[in-house]
Amino acid sequence: MITVRDASEDDLPAIIAIYNESIPAGRSTADTEPITVAERLDWFRKFDAKKRPIWVALDQGRIVGCIYLLWFYGGRPAYNKTAEISTYISSSHQGKGIGTMLKERMIKACPRLGVENLLSMYFDHNVATQRLNDKFGFEGVGHLPEIAEVFGEKRGLRISLLRINKSEQAGAVNPHAFGAFAMSAADRPLAPKTK
Ligand SMILES: CC(C)(COP(=O)(O)OP(=O)(O)OC[C@H]1O[C@@H](n2cnc3c(N)ncnc32)[C@H](O)[C@@H]1OP(=O)(O)O)[C@@H](O)C(=O)NCCC(=O)NCCS
Image (cartoon, rainbow, N blue to C red; front, side):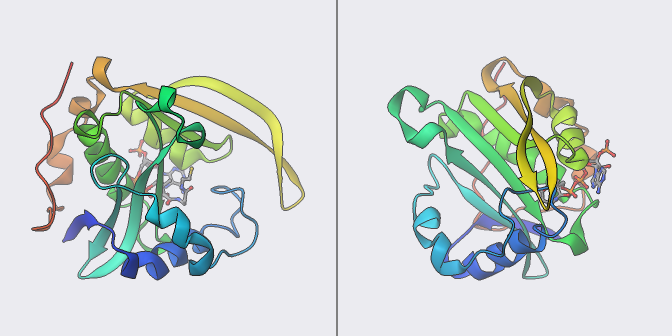
């Protein structure tokens, strides 16, 4: 059974290990070398469970994925209702619906987190993220072609947007598809869906 809870600083090594696992494929991140826990400590401490959370997914107590919301554009106040979403699932657990479950749950939490505009930025050859976003109705709002170079290949960046208060996409996902997942005691209840 997969459970979900807020991440703690003790979880950071597992989170970084999953992130680093994704680097060699060159599809997920602009990092091209493994990062360290020490490098990400300040980054981790900027998360705030009430506004910009980071959650981990656990399979029998082992962290197998994480999802988080980042302040947009340096966190300047005019962007307070805008957040960037990122999801990382351990390669051993990809393709099993965990990314979908985490993203659905985060989208449902957005109203109580004060997020109205959810941005997803990803390389244009990241098919899994594209499909995941399509399921929730993210709209393509930008494409920066050949803006990055990853392991010698020019790569583009797609920017997709989900307007939370106008969205019914979270409800469009079949809830029965997530029957195998459960919330841990630490999970908070989901906010009611908004229109
Ligand atoms: C992208 C990612 C978060 C998706 O999570 P996941 O748990 O593997 O995805 P799910 O099992 O919920 O499937 C979501 C959709 O992606 C598709 N998908 C998953 N893995 C895929 C792959 N390797 N290639 C193509 N499509 C894939 C699934 O088919 C599904 O679409 P469908 O329902 O239309 O069939 C996960 O694969 C991952 O962590 N990848 C590496 C890190 C990464 O790229 N993160 C995003 C950074 S912007």
